Picture 1 (cartoon, rainbow, N blue to C red):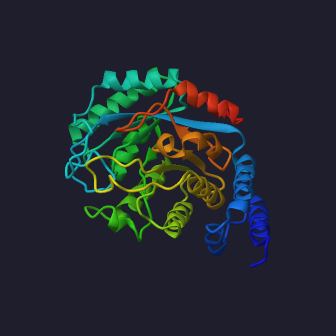
Picture 2 (tube, helix red, strand yellow):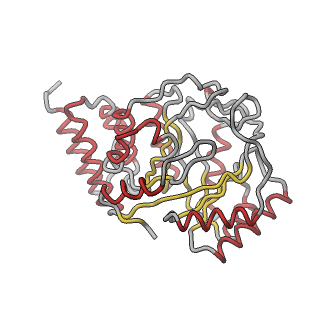
Length: 330
């Protein structure tokens, strides 16, 4: 292979994307094999594409685990599944006051968005009505954009969430269609895709991404990215497996930092106009490379902790964001 093959390929792909033409599948697959001497060139190209389409605005989100544990699904990575002996706490839907307080604290911490998350399958009608009232209170009392992540969603509930002020709904595909049966057998990939389509039809933005390090191949990560592009997803969280004790993946070996950075860059090339967030597992797996991810195509992150694991102090995150050249998005 020509010595500078990858340099020429990276330059050609960047030029095409900046002309608002899509990367081709064979190009993305070739770039999976980018050698170390060309990796920084790939990351820099992704960064320039991010600047071109998204500027230096930074999208941040804080979340509340509003109902934890007790989930009957068998997602192999999840500490909240009742099928495994994970360490996650289990509790019913928290009060409206707790949700409003958490939203206010998220805003004070600088988060642009606040996401209410529930585990354990569909909310009962009583729980859903209570949650709608809580979200309406947040919408009227707190100056913060509202997200929600409540599992599978039908048209009626999507409309109610939108009317309550929710503008973005999170529902991750987690991995590729091909690999999904290795991760979950209690529901289908198509069910997840259908919820994404329901959210889009309701006029809400979709926050939809996945987890890398589940045992999937690099090609299957590309499958996920191209599926998200085809669906028209505009916010993509990239989680990196932080293995949880008691789950089937507790001994999985997560990808190395440079592999994570390459994945972030390729997602930017495939989804040039999306918000791409480094999310769960970034502290544990990227370590000192977190800021580099912000100059490799990412333009957002989750702050203040995750569903069952803690994050790091938000002050450190905001200093990193500032030093990376971003401006917090209002």
